[in-house]
Length: 101
Image (cartoon, rainbow, N blue to C red; front, side, top):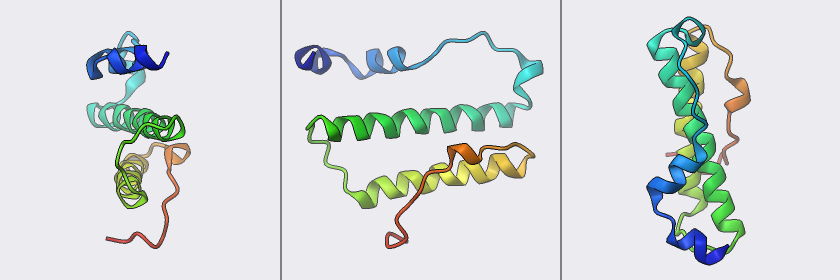
């Protein structure tokens, strides 16, 4: 497994993580809502990938400060989506208050 993981390319990993669906504009809302939804899904996947790498001993070089910056950007997407009338509170990521820019 370890050797297989290291030989996968970034593109291969992304393709494996994406669930392909047929796009239905009538169910997806406006283009902006669709884009915000997809970006929040990608943020969840990326954070899960970072946490998995750290848990499995891969040296990825990210400190908590950098991970918190990532979470804050995700939370801005959540706020933008909610302002459009959506409900993305379940995508909110907890940050550490001591890492304020």
